[in-house]
Image 1 (cartoon, one colour):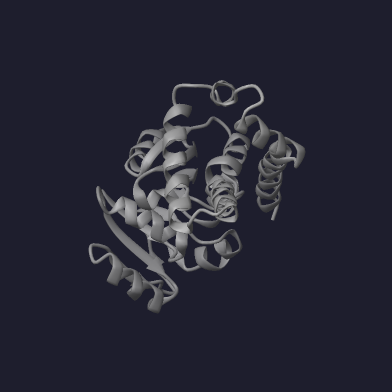
Image 2: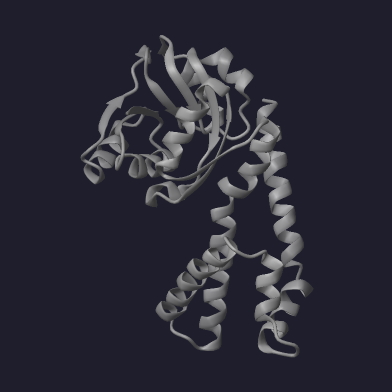
Amino acid sequence: MKLTLIGNGIMAQSLAKGLIKNHEVEIIGRDIDKLRNIKEKMPQITIKALDDQEDITGKNVIFCVKPYALQSVSARLYGTANILLSILAGTKLETLRKQIKAKHYIRTMPNIAASVQNSMTTITGDNEAKNLAIEIFNSIGQAVWVNTEVQLDIATAIAGSGPAYLALVAEALADGAVKAGLERHLSMQLVQGLFSGTASLLKHSHPAIIKDSVMSPGGTTAAGYAQLEEHGVRNAMIKAVEEAYNKAQELGKK
């Protein structure tokens, strides 16, 4: 399947890196130098500078610009796309329908793990395009259909923003080991293995069960866990998801 990505930022590049393994990929962007750099890294893709009048007729478009750039970029598009798949956080389907012509509209939120074909992607939109959207995003990880845009915005706060939160946790764990005296490269190797193994456990067990299975009475894990609770790590994570959702709602009102 041929896919046209409009945008040349980090997310567009992550998607392209994952999608080229199963699809023909074209990237259209405003920064020709950045496009050339992308082409050097991924020779399989086709690149094109965004024209003042860019014809999207019949194309399967993944719209990858920042929300604030929607109006300026959409003004340069003409024709009717086969499908418009938008990754713009908080931008409603109603807004997309007003700005860009397409037969079908989809909102989706992949994450940067798309580059290693392991994105957790949430999708909503026109039911007629559901199967096509799921097929595309299943090719770069796991795709989950949600029934409303509100659900997508909540999911964005977890699956879309989540890699940043978990990266912070990973970095902090490694820093703790370094502070205690372990070399940085060993600390990072341990953290990488920890995240991989825990991800596998989470597919089969509830987080509370995993936690209790590790935490012996009066043991090392219990001592460390008490510090996490004392310093509000649980509440901070809840607040992070809540604020990311609120921001998505705010973006949707602009």
